[in-house]
Length: 173
Image (cartoon, rainbow, N blue to C red; front, side, top):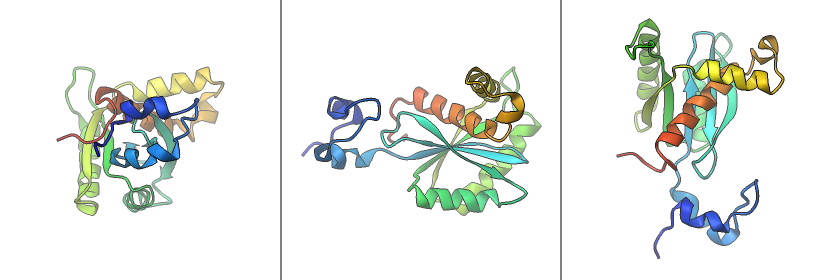
């Protein structure tokens, strides 16, 4: 029995909801669930990949003053059976790393300590908040109304760019 990739299974998927036929479900177990993180000192946006590892969806915003973000990420990872975390790494326009990157690196190291078996990747997050804000505006949200979801939307942009760059993400060596 040769395990099929999601691309080979795609003809078995139906409609925009991509309902999975029962006969193909066992073949999708190799797909890795991934969460994307947009770190901020006030709010942390979290997104999650779909079951096919192709699309990022908003998951939640963690309010740092109310909830320990590391504990919440551990909880999400266990609940959703996450195997990989992608965290947005801020860069300056010239590609160099600045003070914000040092804060993200510190946060990333806390996640690594808490989840030592977790695969963690960084993703360039330049312009993700700007792109997310533009998409929310195009969808009819004002800056004020999008404030509570902008971090999730930026996390979606981070994760989606990772998924797009890596194809259907299964596992990077």
